[in-house]
Length: 123
Length: 106
Image (tube, rainbow over all chains, first blue to last red; front, side, top):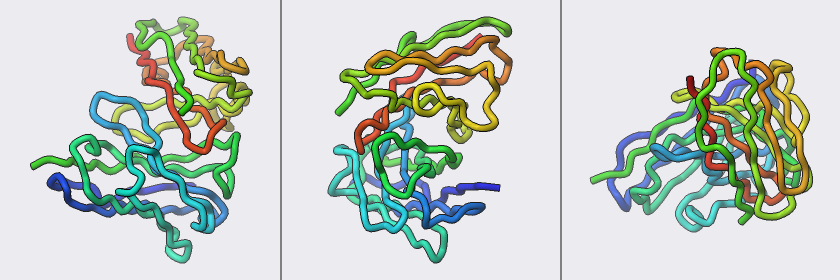
């Protein structure tokens, strides 16, 4: 069974850091691009970042570029999101999602999602 | 960034109703439009990809249509498990964007 399980969320003060993990199983992890998508309280889904299957290519939303870093360890089938300089507006449930292609190309979609991990930024 | 505007933002419906949700893009995105539904505390689920292709395992009561800037998701006969929030998402650009969501409730 294809599965994604996020972890690492919690309460952090503004300006602090947190690293999220997403453990993947049931598919050839290195063959697919992986994304992070978040949902702030009372808001809709917002795409955050994506990394290619090899990890060589990464893209970020303007709202997190320069503060967040996406990475992956294909030997451990795990996706990461390092979040620095956290702000109140980063409070959200963070989902990881599997793309259907190895690269973020036009016409892709996410066919498997995790349930998410909650990040709260507050003093 | 490409903006997606869904309508309505919410709707009330009954089991068995036919439901239609629209999604309008701020520029032409060809058929690079996907639909998901999401229930609180659960993983979002892919319903339709490439505007009109039904994801494997998704019931045939779901259908999608459209191209260019105007798209539609239709549920032919609403079931109890379909009460959720529905999102369109464009994959024309590298930076994905989602619509603001349509909450389908009783």
